[in-house]
Image (tube, rainbow, N blue to C red; front, side):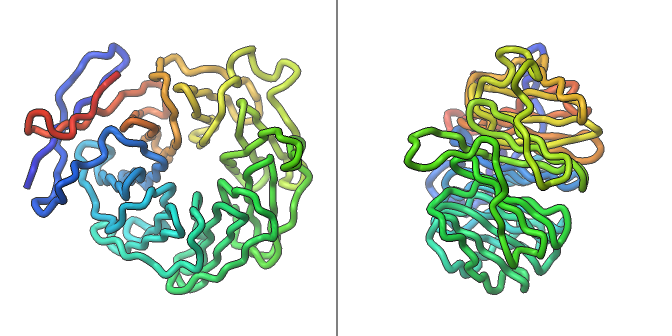
Length: 345
């Protein structure tokens, strides 16, 4: 077994040696992608999974005290993970990749996918019912835990970036050109909603939406290109909220790629280290006090007790244990000198 050390960089940016990282003895010749891009993070209680470039899956079962590399069995990019329990989860990736685990990721098994399109988001409403969406209007559905996936794609050639359900019947999809789709019948029908930022392909404009969150069954938010933020009170109508003084100048200038919520607070992350926060219902968006490095931050997630992670390009991992009041950068390095070192900017 090869052992890896983990370092964190706190608010003072001082290095503190911490913890350990395990790489299986039967590792391939290629080093783990510590410096490559991480695209998704999923937290469940004390557990966390990070997915990214070249089939990378990192796992921690103790709020980042230690890490393991889980064997994905693929070299495809992995974009998002979803778990319905501590043991059962799925990962979606490029070229139709869908992976499934029944043992918390100790083993990942590829599922048969009816598409070669990139799958950017995956969401399960139960251990049996799940959805995956991606490029060229791709929508996949399963009602048997992924043993079989049915293609329910829409007719539009549009990239669908994120799907989320608040109940088995009601869900939303957001994507390229600012499109928003909604279902009220468990995905039997997906109806396009009126989006205040949607543009036609022929317009040449870019108005992408990358993520959406519903902290409860009443209100939701969507985030996208050029820092746009949309809000809905009922799920049926959407309005732009970061105009006319709703946010201080400069706060929402950068693209926003992902969002999460914890203890009444909304978080959004994006390009050039953008991390903004607002109290739910107040729309008082502001930058966090911790200065994140100027690189793309692609995903964020929290557990109910305030444990949270932000991940991004070039191996970026940031952790909080108190709901975002303080952040630490995690640095993963192997004990063997010069091998797979996670650099800190």
